[in-house]
Length: 303
Image 1 (spheres, rainbow, N blue to C red):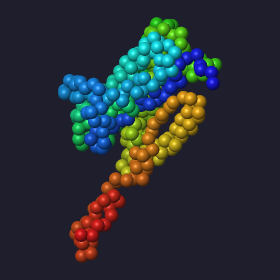
Image 2 (image 1 turned 90 degrees about the horizontal axis):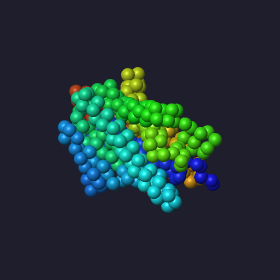
Image 3 (image 1 turned 180 degrees about the vertical axis):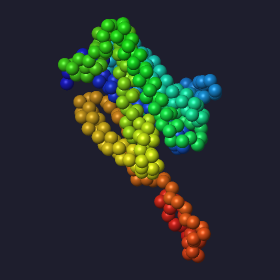
Image 4 (image 1 turned 60 degrees about the horizontal axis):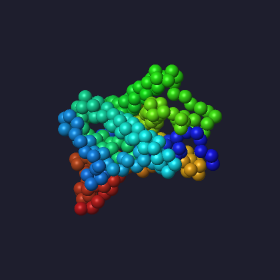
């Protein structure tokens, strides 16, 4: 299969897709961690003592697109890898910073920001905030990427006198050509990267920003549990449909990985973890007093 006259390593789009951010809106309400301190390659603090941890795994989607180029044109590969590293870090970090900033305005303190293999993660301290507040926090990230995409596109227009071109006749014609200079390449990839992050993050699925926003929109009409289930079902459908892109791309030699993940959406669709109302103690019979309601689904456990 002949390579297109674009940035070598078809996997550029794969790395940008791989670099989607997994939004942990709700902070410590979401269990688990993106990594441990042992995986941290860089740690620094923002004002208000918010630690930022960058895992060594964050380098994987940076290096991945240019493996073929390193073998054939190491000088160009070094330039492209360095530029892409700066763009990826800035795009995801500013995305997470927008979450933290709006969270502070909503009265929700940020515990830490993490950058790792699958993008970024903003963890918030435990706080009782209403659903609209979490929706505002969720949408802040994609809005930051919209601003960045507009900036790169406008800068490209001002410098080169046209909007970022797309060549339909060329496979992957939305990637910059090999003849593009460093400045043109930077502005082109900067716009493309942020557009990719916008599209991925607004998908109505967990654990993406779009899932939090969609849940808030469904909340008033369907209630908390039903709204979460609807978003979970949407996420399951999207999780299955993504393989219609991933598998053909893999056959063509293009490395892609798309969100959303299946597990969190399957859990939400099943309604696992939803609390059932406790029985009224005043109406308990002697038999009911001999059991306790525990576990998932309120299973009875005899004392």
